[in-house]
Amino acid sequence: MNRIITISREFGSGGREVGKRLADELGIAYYDKEIIQEMTEKTGLKAEYIQAVSERGMPPYAFQFAKSFAVYSQMNRNQTEILVEQQKIIKELAQKGDCVIVGRGANLILKDYQPMNLFIYADMASKMRRCREKGSKEEKLTDKEMENQMKQIDKQRKKYHEILSGFEWGKKENYHLCINTSDLEIKTIIPSLGAYIRNWFERREKQK
Amino acid sequence: MNRIITISREFGSGGREVGKRLADELGIAYYDKEIIQEMTEKTGLKAEYIQAVSERGMPPYAFQFAKSFAVYSQMNRNQTEILVEQQKIIKELAQKGDCVIVGRGANLILKDYQPMNLFIYADMASKMRRCREKGSKEEKLTDKEMENQMKQIDKQRKKYHEILSGFEWGKKENYHLCINTSDLEIKTIIPSLGAYIRNWFERREKQK
Image (cartoon, rainbow over all chains, first blue to last red; front, side, top):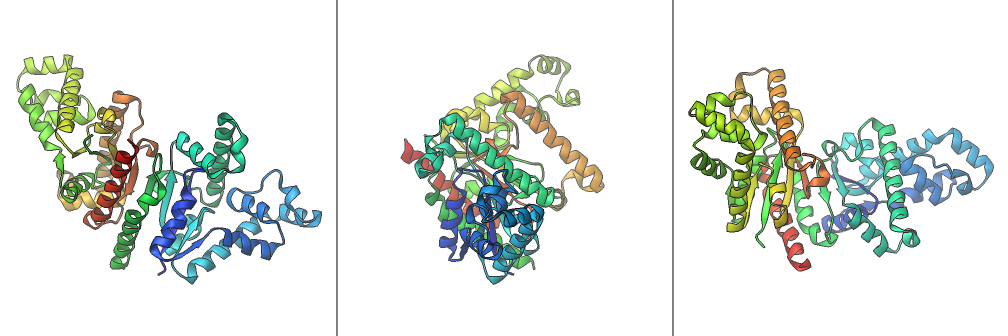
């Protein structure tokens, strides 16, 4: 069985960086934008829109992303179908070989693959610092505005997760390892984290 | 500053084994029974009683453990003092050198030492299996009775923690790493976990 690592993360916790670096460390595939790309091709919708729906369900401002009103109407009716399509793509990627998948409820979608599920989190100060360093578009916001926006995104992720499964997003019992990245430089933890993950999968294979 | 690792754990999750093995792996001291021993000498109370109070506050059956009624009465009046005494001992141990301390709210008591705080947990099936394998006194209980008893102990730990600090026991935000030991053989994760911890402290020292 392929070794699948899923990464769920709080906004600003550095989860995506953990995912990319882990994939490099372990020499396996990393999927994030690739999923959006494939969805864009299959649905005719813009990447920004897919990004929003694929992790958080239909956003209220969906209309502006649709290439035409006809597409928008269809999307609105068929939101479930987008999520079904995404699940298909994620399963196809998991079948291809060992990989790291960030977000999108992959931990739930790939349950039958016995993935190792990580949750990445951090305190608010560290998350804000990380966002400002990345120079994301939130840059010009005040601290309070930024904090509200980050909380809002995480709330949507949580909700999407619960729609998928009834599982609670961020509840440690639903993950194999929960990593607090506050004040950590991500790259320093990768070698030992990679070793932990290798151990974890060796155990899984022995138990078969 | 000394490197202090605190381990909080659900009953049956293998947290104590993680602590012992980590201390071996890192070549540092391990404190668990030593704390009880010192408390016994200082207070004249039996080890079983100290064990119960020191992690969970005063148990209802405290009376049977006291060596005399006078001791019991004093204990009852001075429960806070026991906890203060324990805090003193824990701080003395932390000052001696690098160490692993299991339970007793050491993560809170030693806050000023910037310890690395781990939380060890597992699913109920794994915890029951671990308890039965250890052949603890719960052995003759039915699964349901055992589950109730385990939950009860964790509830007391949680309560004690909250008395100490208002911090929520088991909430991932209060720990640096939360490790799910379900289906894991503890010894297999120790080398990589040890490496992770070394990285973590190197970072702390660099930031000074």
